[in-house]
Amino acid sequence: MSAAAILHLLIAFALAPLMTGVANRVKAGFAGRTGAPVLQPYYDLARLLRKGAVYSTTTTWVFRLGPCLGVAGAAAALVVAPWGGGRATLAFDGDLLFFAAALALARFGTILAALDTGSAFEGMGASREATFAALAEPSLLVGLLALARASGELSLSGIYHALTPGHLAAPGGVAVLLVAAAFGIVFLAENARLPVDDPNTHLELTMIHEAMALDHGGPDLALIHYGAALKFWALGTLVAGFVAPVHDGAWTALAAILGGMFLLSVAVGVAESVMARLRLAKVPNFLAAAFALSVLALLLSAHAKGGS
Image 1 (tube, rainbow, N blue to C red):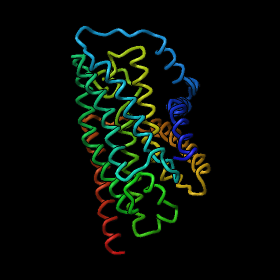
Image 2 (image 1 turned 120 degrees about the vertical axis):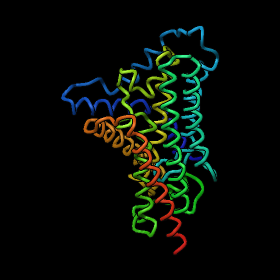
Image 3 (image 1 turned 135 degrees about the vertical axis):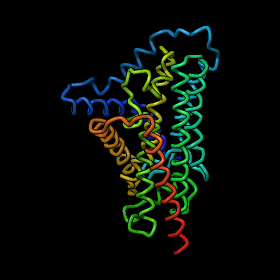
Image 4 (image 1 turned 180 degrees about the vertical axis):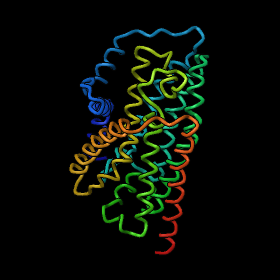
């Protein structure tokens, strides 16, 4: 566990909400508006933490546990998340499964809290979240297996440390590009971004993630927003790792991944400005494309290894 890895973890906890602010500011610029300050997510978190919480008489301790599990799961994923060519704070063989399981735990807590309210709208949002997660999670897992096959490593840190610009010219380079495309789709879906979901929508019939937080308020809602920001950073490191595979030293890799995360936030803002939201019936096809890319990448990586 290096000092740079610990610093990356602390920076992630501190700057995760900033990424949402950057994406929103880019969207405002495309729309010709000044937009909210880049630090607006921090102001919102501070405002919510100062408020009290009101709980329905139909809810139980599960409703209060949900936001905590959301933050805990995203934080656990961050601990094993690599950053470019740098090593994660905690790296071990099989941590790629731990990464996916931690994110699944965060989602499970949010879904349980939504169902505990007994609200029809929150139940609808939870059902949609579970349905789309069943399509997105296999794409993530199969993509990680393809990278593990191509690199010969079983750790996320080892996999991303093996990625270099010259690796794309290797026999398994096409598989890496396919996984990068699949992870881009999964990143948008898992973070409730367009074209899968609209984080700024207020129409209940089209809500997915936001529908599950309708009854939360005060500190609980702050935890949900902060957990979503940590999840954005954790999955963002996987996508940015393809863009910034720097191996010239831990501190250089840290600077590269910070720049990569900033560029990713700008890219999200641009994509949401030029793309329309898909109809709910079309979202499964979008996620199925990510799964197909991951499976194809796994087959190509296995072929490349078998032929080498």
